[in-house]
Figure (cartoon, one colour):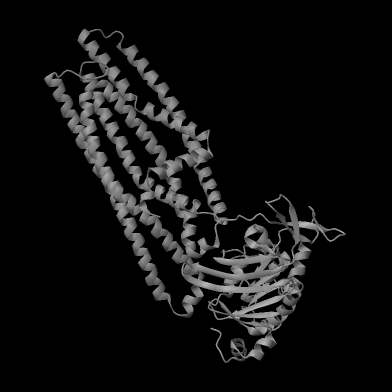
Length: 631
């Protein structure tokens, strides 16, 4: 994202967002701020009236009514101050509700939107930088909304109010003040503009630092094994230096702005005093809306208004630091919220069905363990039901992650219901890519993929993925009990069904030996379990989902040979009656596959059963006999 995005449009969008969340409270808060700010500018008016009363009494010698009039003016001012105090208290309380509520809703919108993003986004963006949107960017926005915005609004209203009073009393002195303020604005724009650029760089650099720290924490064992501590420190120092440089420059410009403006204000105060004295001595006719003659009753309050006017301009400048940081954070938040969600134009859905006597299927609400694809035909308005069987076929599929860098080329294969298809080949040959395409994590460039005779582009993605079970090489367990982690595969599963799934995967034995058995709490991606045990739980999670198609991507890669023998029996039971795609480097795990497909640089070079491929004495034979290194 470019710096030009941190502008008035970002600020306007923040205001529209807050107003959209709180259509009643937000205008009420603004009204309270406006009232408080206007009342804060009234003392100059009361002072002018008091001095004018004294001045008139001095000239006429009549002091009889001065005291009562002054008391009435002071009483009226006191009433205004009490009302302003009530308004100020109200808006501070409302801002607490609005600020925290806005941040809560923004986090919800960000997280909800993130769940709809395609896998490609997470593959191409640093996870720590994504996390920074929820922490640093949200926090800078909090400070802007809760403190800087109300302060700037109040100061702006005070400036307008005081300016109006100045124009009412004396145009000549107002022009002097305007000239001084023009100089202040030029300085603010020049210094504040540079500050904004560096504050955005600070937020970006902070996200990079957090991303690097997260990466180093996840890879601590690898770092220590290869004694890479010093190199990691050097890389961190480089990123930290970039963060320091951006932060130091941003704050240097922001911090120098306040003293410069304060001193310009002091000089302006002196200039206004001199100009007012000159007007009194020379007797220049006063130019004003009020039509009053220029005198002490105008000159003295005008000096106070000048101080108040310049002070409010200074208050605005003091908030520039937080405002620019808040806008930088808001721009990054909106950037995440504006990411295009994963496209899903599918209209074929997965439904429960009941088989009729004539073999046809009828949709039903209750679970029958019979699933069907509900296929509405737009041409004639009819609906057909196709039994979910697990027939998967690829026709001349081409795919590339990046333009002009093909990963799969002209891949055609089929897996009939109940068949076990294995993919073997070197790393990068395209094995995992095929399974990513079946899940529609990515869409193919050319060719077709049909699932039970239906083009998978027509199937709603959530229903497609619900019909597929997948066990990845890298396990991901969530904070919760063992039982909850298994049930993640099917949130409607009972405890008994989860236990059966664990028994099927061969995980029941070690689970019962845990301190609280199935109620043992797991944290930190199951850090209190071995890698093999975590993998067994992920297999049990897939088993409880009970899908017709299973994808096992190096599912036993982290399991020792003895455990593998235990798991293999459960895996065989799990795979029975299902279409299974297996990716494995251990060729012993694919021997009993119906068909083995050998991939090389995105091409299918061999296919057949274990015995057929050995008889061909091609690459699979070399891989199996050890004459050819898989990698």
